[in-house]
Length: 137
Image (cartoon, rainbow, N blue to C red):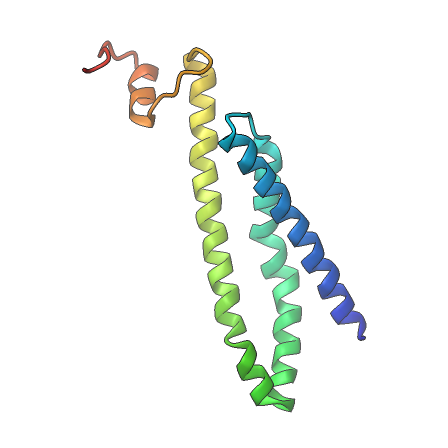
């Protein structure tokens, strides 16, 4: 097996382990625990840069050779460049969502919300601005 393929396999294994780490952090959140947002942020930053800068170009080069040598085999794989673009777009969406969550977490640190109380984002904004609106109901 070529060295490039071995490198790609190691990179895939590394990315899979990062996905498992993200899944574990999300599971912690879903169970009511406190995920490690710094781990999540680091993993997302990795996915925002490494694949497009280093990993996908290697795959694209190999795929281009495959297209030349065996177009039928390349066709069964599909549109690799489109897949890479979709992955990058979804990663940017995840990053944007994470930024919102982290900003909300910082607001909660400032607002002093009692433990176990869940606050909607709009309610949190009002609390941070000193609104005197009480609960509706």
